Image (cartoon, rainbow, N blue to C red; front, side, top):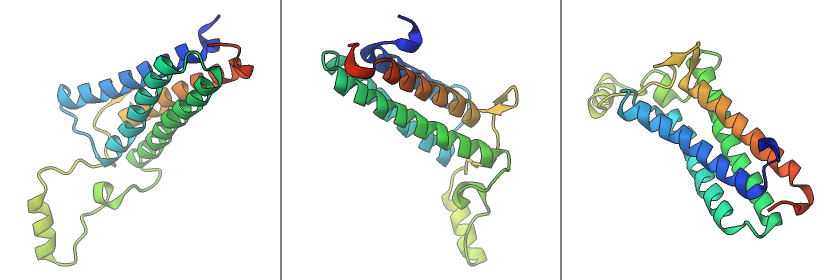
Length: 169
C-alpha cells in the first residue's frame, strides 16, 4: 500500500488531520503572529471544520462499511476543495486580479459624511481582504491555503479511486 492508495478509513483520518493542521496554522498566525483574519479568511476556515468533523466521524464509524467510507471521502474532498476555491478567490482579490466583497476590500459605504463617520467609529479595526499581510515566496496565506486544500482534495479523490469497489476498509 502506498499513501496515495490509502484505505478509505486512513485517508479520512489523514484529510481530517491535514485540515486540522491548516486550521491550526491559521489560528497560530492569528493569535501569535498578530495577523487577524479578514472576512474571507474566516470563510476559508469553515470548510476545514466540516472536513475535520466528517473525516474523524467517518474514520471512527465507517471503517467496516467501505461504501459509506468512500462516500465520506467524496464529502471531505468537496469540503477541502471549497476552502481551496475560496482561497483562490481570496488570493486573486489580494493580488488585484478581481474585486472582492465591498465590506472588506472596497471603500466604506455610506450615503452621507455622518453615516460614514458612524460606520468608522463603530468599527475597531477593519481587516482588509485585498491586502497581503504575510507572504512566503510571494504566496499569501490565502494562496497557501488554496494550494494545500487542493492537494488534500486530490489525495482524498485518489484514495476514493484506489478503493473502487469497496475492496479496502
